[in-house]
Length: 417
Length: 102
Image (tube, rainbow over all chains, first blue to last red; front, side, top):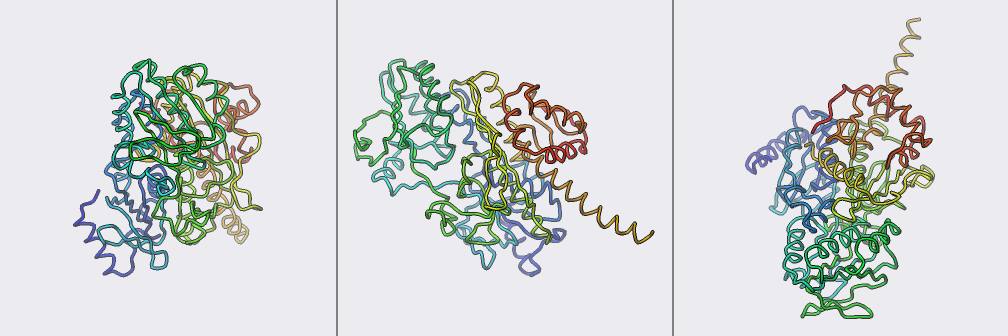
């Protein structure tokens, strides 16, 4: 992290020099916005593959990276918050210039971003990984319930994760936990069902008379359906009750959660709001005004050439979930494309990404879904390769260990740990 | 003769660089589990950096035909063409071998 003073000086010099490319970085300047799986990986791989030839600045609001994958284990008391958090020093050591701040506006024509403090950063190429924003207006009372702490989403890891953990610990035995799942698409399709399993397991151990009610706006479990159905019965029967086709309509002032066919009063409200692309890229969200359509060869926003968007904010290709794993993979495509565009070379005509999502059904047993996605030149999109990928036959402790290993490796890969 | 050499160099140069980049890009899809540039964290994942290409290709072929048991690998190896796997194996074999980090 460079100090504000030196940042201003560096910016001033660059402006004064007018060439706008720092000495040594002959390819140009790339600004990366957002330090989650997508943004951190983009910054890391730009330096890994571009070295001193490219000047990379990462702008992130938070001092530390916080992982959504593995955060459900924190909620269940099987990991602590510190263990899913990492600093950005690894990226600093790779030569990534880091600015702690919030980008509030993107100027694709003038090729700058504006920060909340009024400062600007100029770029030759911009990579934005803004993650998700919540569509709170869709559900009256939800914003107020989240603001007051009466409800928590815990769908962006950090203080919300800790808050849900605290509320579960404070739950009286015999209490009721309500989780509501929004209509797809949302971040991490299997995530809510993993959380349901882990919360139910915690309740069974610590509050044997407590109940977890899971109301899903979708008509069925959205990922690993048969495996989760088995886990619900095998491990969590009597604690966890799951109901599909139940969309949250409103949260009343007294904390009552109103669904189409029932009102639910619960001691803990874990209400996961419907989602869209992060607010920062709202102007480029041309898919249902919700997600950013991109060109899959370069990850450039269709609505803003020069602005590359990766991660949960993009309009996913068919069968491609919104996952940290894929944000990392998309970021590598974007980094490679950006370097080639800066060099004036043709971009990779045949990009490939793959996904592995592990879900825990108990604190030690996990299962996976995996897929490989290759570019289809005729349809200009990524398509799941037929015959490839698949699911675990069953959750196992072996895959639980693999899941922990996956987390260590993807954190290290994304953050240069 | 001289002109022919020059032509060969001009043709070979970009092709090799493109293959290396293609291998690099494909190999980067392995990093989430196997570590950046094949240097895995933890005891579970074999370090891929420096692995001989023939050995890696034989192992991948075994995963593909079900002769090598596994969890994720037998499923995802089918998502890559033989030519892509050769590029991946060539890339990892070109890297210096590294011990797995704790």
